[in-house]
Amino acid sequence: MKTRNMREMKKILLLGAMVLSVSTLKAQVSYFGNEATNIEKLKILKNTTTLFTLTYSDYSELAKFDEAIKKTWTITPYKIIRPEELAVYDKLERYSFFYFDAYAETRDTITNANVVYTLKLISPSDKPKQRDESIFAMVTLFPDIYTEQTVKEIGDKSGARRSIKKELLNSLYNNAQFINWSPGLLAGYLKQINDGLLAQESRELDYQFYNKVRLPKLATETLYVPEYVREVFSLQRIKLPTSNTAQEQYNYKLKFLPFKELDSLILSKTEGIKYLVYTRRSKDKIISIYDSKDDKIIYQKFYFQTPEFEMDDLNDIKKVVKSIK
Image 1 (cartoon, rainbow, N blue to C red):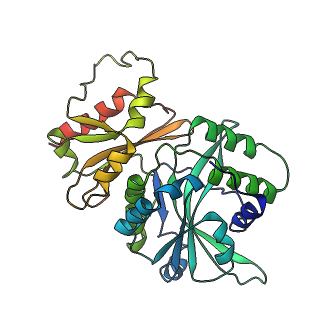
Image 2: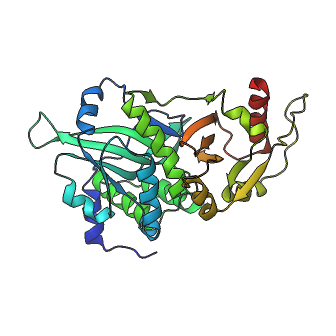
């Protein structure tokens, strides 16, 4: 991947001068349409054009990303721009932004860095020469080990906050790799945000939920799984049962697919599939299932301090299916 020159990267960083500082998010896709500080700003957001930025490597699939956004994003008009174009819109009203960022989270004196895809509205402030920044949504991303380490190293550096932010965004846009990121997966993420904000709702703490009508259909339908899940799972050691009661194994239909094939099925207008997303978030994980028929989420479970994908995660899905069949 080609690295952009520093002049271009400086322009990117004008969008945000602060590293995010947020409470712990236990939903893979979080949105904040019912927060007291956002209710009035939501009216402003709906009258903006939303600018989507992608990593530089994503622009080779620009048509697919545009198809995914068009499929599920209705709350505002939108436009996909390149990261260096943010400077053109940064100080103008009537625009909101989706961009990559990271925030620190400290547990028991250990600080972890979480990478997110964030929807932000920048609007005029009552204070002279200042602007209000309102965050309306975040998608938790699963960075590969090199991206995760780089983000941590940048976050541990001392120095001016703006300088650190510049280096962080430079890395995220030029060099980062996200495992749970593709045009098809983005469609599901955006559907949650779009519908949640339209309904003026918030979601940030979801340990587990499921659709009682759609999830039981997995007993007879195929669950599609991105190939990266099998790759991660194959690296794990086989674990002995942790309780005296052996858990019934997942024996419903599974099909592993590379992103190119999975995206085509998700974005297809003629058929719907149910597919799994595994997100590793610092020392935790989130397992989600989406229905591409209308891109709605039908299952999610948050696992505290259990970051690796395990067979028991599939078994947990079967347990829920059997409980509501």
